[in-house]
Length: 167
Image 1: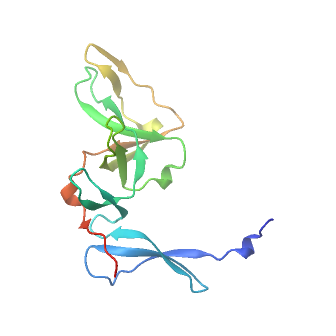
Image 2: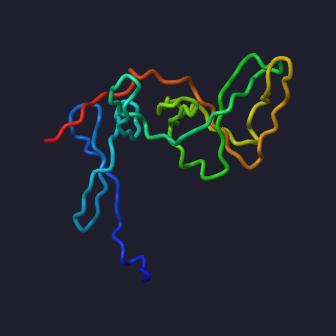
């Protein structure tokens, strides 16, 4: 079975700005009257978020950023001043303002959130080094990649908490 593009209804994204409080519901809506809940908008952080439970059992609305595996680079040739980056060769425009970094070393699921503080094409990436002080080497960026400099891990207190309930 095949479908023509005209068989589908266009949808748009809307935020219910009139809702009180920091978290606003986001909906997908269509011209034919369809409307369904998508996620939450954190009006203070200016980003979409969804609820996750942290290691303390708190439900927090965590920015819906892309999952990341950051790499540690150094700003000096002695490998003593670290800076975190992640990179992509695919659709850098799809990245928001935050990334989720998942701890894969532990047996329990955990994630931290880091802001993207700069987006840098490979050709503009300042000199960086990799390794450790006894064996510090210049880094050669992938010329096709876009690099994202990451800020420090955000404190959980920055995210809105919530409880699960039925109205």
